[in-house]
Image (cartoon, rainbow, N blue to C red; front, side, top):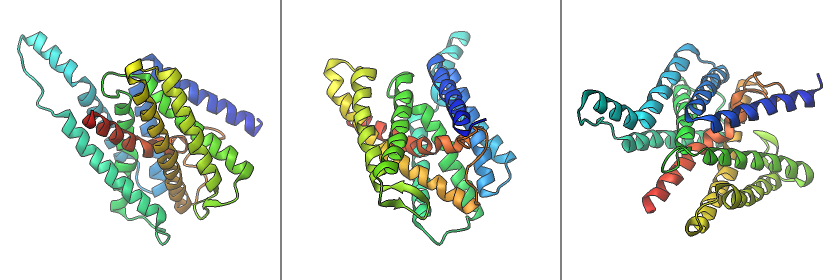
Length: 296
């Protein structure tokens, strides 16, 4: 089969599966990203050369537990109270849990950035491998699910809008970089990325953020200006940190001596190759939401 056709078919299946699960229900969205997490852990374990069974079991259990506690604790409490005719509350402070997980994820993100810029690192220590598994792979998947709730209930438009920004940024960074790119962005890690492509991707992502806010999110008139500023800010976050996330994954692959993280998507590589930008962006976007919520 022609490589371009193969790439197009696998890409279309991925997008359809992603959009269908996000739009159908909260549960399908959680299940799909739980499956993506397991595959990503498998691929990342291959990259850093660690045994897969324990990380996969831990990641699946941790993701399931935190997701249930975070998003269904109120439903569980109400059900218990109704069944036993009591008035108890679960002694779990979800906000404190979110802050703890966010701090861990951000600390590991900083470690990942340092890892990217330290040229002499060609071998990863055992402790760092498991730290990256937790903070670079597992926790971001939790924040992807948390972002979809904004500050209220599940809103598929939020996560779809975030994916659209990432796709636009990646696509136009590639198109502009290939067309007019001359100055390399980070040649030692990703020889094809250029500064012109990087800036072009951000510009088109910001424009798309404006369009998403104006014609897709459609905030109430009194919140429309604020919504535009929020989505433009998210577009900047995606453009900058999405690119960094892509470069970090490239550094892991370069050390491992492989081109792709996996082969599950013909023509595209692995799930980690498709989600490398969003998993690095997710904790930062979640932090942005927390700051907005605090300020408001």
